[in-house]
Each structure stands twice: as C-alpha cells, then as structure tokens.
Length: 147
Image 1 (cartoon, rainbow, N blue to C red):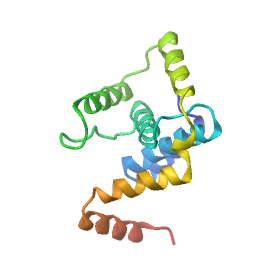
Image 2: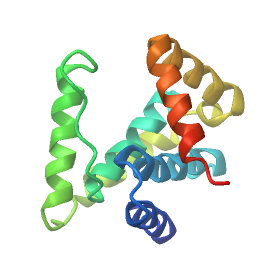
Image 3: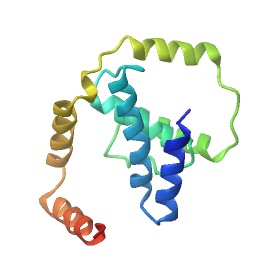
Image 4: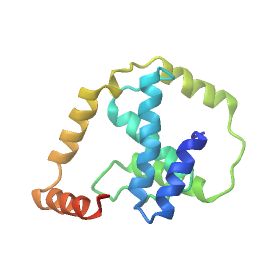
C-alpha cells in the first residue's frame, strides 16, 4: 500500500494536469526510498522501478501497459492486471502471499537504489531512445519548467 504522502503528491500532479508518467514517478520515488531506507531490497534498479509503476497502476494512475515491442508478454499482462485492479474496488489481499513477497524482497540487496545504479539505469534507458525522441523530451521539459 502506498504511503498517504505519495498518494497526495500524485493527486496534486493530476490536478496540475501533469502526465500519468509524472504521477507514477511519485510511486517510483517512494519505492527507491524504501530500498534506500532498508525497508526492503531490490534485485536491480529496474525491479524497483517496476514495483513503483505497479503500485501506481493499482492506485488508479491512468498509466497504460507497455506496447507490444517494448516489454515481454508476461510484463504486459501483469501491467494490464494492475490497471484493472486500479479501476475496481479493493479486495482483501492474501496475507500469506504478501508475507512471502516481503520476505523475498528483504533478502535482496540495497545497492539497486544507489546513485550510480540509478545513473546507470537512466543512461541505458536514454541510450535506447532515438536522438529525436530525447531532443523532443528536453524541449518539452524546458518549456514546462517552473520559472
């Protein structure tokens, strides 16, 4: 369950008309903080980001599942399930399953949330994009930046 503060921040972003990916960023930030605090670990930075995105979808952020060529079938199906969960009212979670997930994550390391790991992840994600795509994003960011 996301923290109240995270839900409020995401709600604020939505009210300001920011994109779903910006709203989801709040949940990813929370997840990275959890790994840094030692609440649990993550096998990789990618996993920590995936957990954050999943939480965002389940919290009702209108974040679409990845397109066909972008992620594996399993990932796309899970994302679609998360979106459906976000639309429907909550059902009681299985305590046994939650406990197993928590225990598994606690066994993982905490270096996935380090500055170097996050930097490496950002660089590799940017490298997969075209120069035009990166340029468009930079221009949009410059235009929408608070002054």
